[in-house]
Amino acid sequence: MQEYKTIEDLGDLNGKVVMLRADLNVPMDENFHVTNTARIDRTVPTIKTLMNKGAKVVVISHFGRPEGKGDVKNSLRYVAPELEKALGNKVVFVDDCIGDVVVNAVKNMKADEVLLLENLRYYNEEKKGDTAWAKELVKPADVYVSDAFSTAHRAHTSMVAAPELLPSAMGLLMAEEVAALTSGLNNPNRPLMAVVGGSKVSTKLDLLNNLVKKVDKLVISGGMAHTFLKVLGADGINENNSLVQMDMLDTAKEILTTAKTHGCEIVLPDDLVVAEEFAANAPHKTVDIDNIPANGTLLDVGSKTIAKIKAKLDECKTLVWNGPLGAFELKPFDNATNQVAQHAAELTQAGKLISVAGGGDTVSALANAGVADKFSYISTAGGAFLEWMEGKELPGVVIFKK
Image 1 (tube, rainbow, N blue to C red):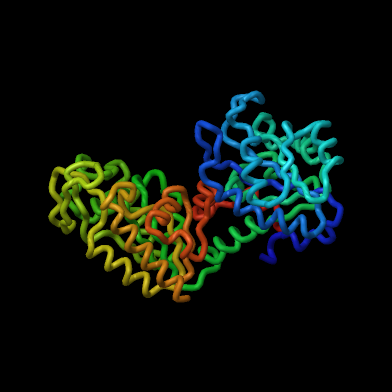
Image 2 (image 1 turned 45 degrees about the vertical axis):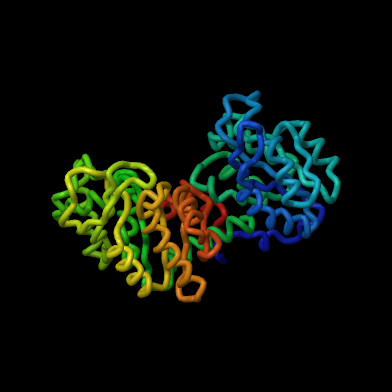
């Protein structure tokens, strides 16, 4: 992390007002109760560290997609009690994020309090990288810290314009995330294996094209594997029984050629689980790829493929994972994802593997497998994690380069 500015580079923070850009965009039910506090919990160490250094912490965040300033259902006021509970310190909510009300609230802060400002996206300027608005935002602050890696792929005002106006650095969570992804993909212990699942090749083109140039082994599974299997001659795959994309066959062929050029071993299914319908506990059977029935629905990979992926994992030192191997949301078609995830977790816990995973479905799938706390690092960032895996520079990360 020597390449980036972190909290340790900020010097003495005693008595200074630190504006902390967090991601408190947490799920909430119809009664305004937070249903998952993971993002709140993960930014608490940064807040505590700043407070322990004598700083006054002012937290800012976006929340949802508000339709104007009066959109009560997207107010951060409902997050304040959960943040207070997680911190163990009083959280004072301010019903704006700029202006005199914020300046006055900062002046009246007590040493053991934290301020939480209202939703940044109540203002259209937040999405525009607006320097003038950024000046209004940071007016009461002395220092700027960002913990919002999950929004780092957006060139929004709070992510890129605001940090340029004050001494700034990454928070503990963002630094941890960047370090994990760097060790997972940019500077890994090899052999390096990637697991990529998902329904369609077209949604992960950039990801696949980047990975085949960087990893030693690439497992392609989920619906997107059907397109690659079709390229390799699996005649039983059709648009009725699978998610094959006939218009992507040439693209899949090009990816396979690029992989061969870069010495990347592509791992595809040897057998598939075919069900009578897309439903939990639907009647099903496992077939080799040479014996795929014309009807039914391909929902998972079979035992031969599971064993092959596990064996490949045993040969590797680093794993990056994005996307489930099958329709994990339907039992028993979560079997392959569960078995491979549990094997990766065992290798990780034994000190034989560095495992990094991310993406919305991936986090849910690993939680379903019971290994959410057994990987080296699981990113809660969706789009930012994917863009990093695609090899793109994230504006909200680059801004902190020394």
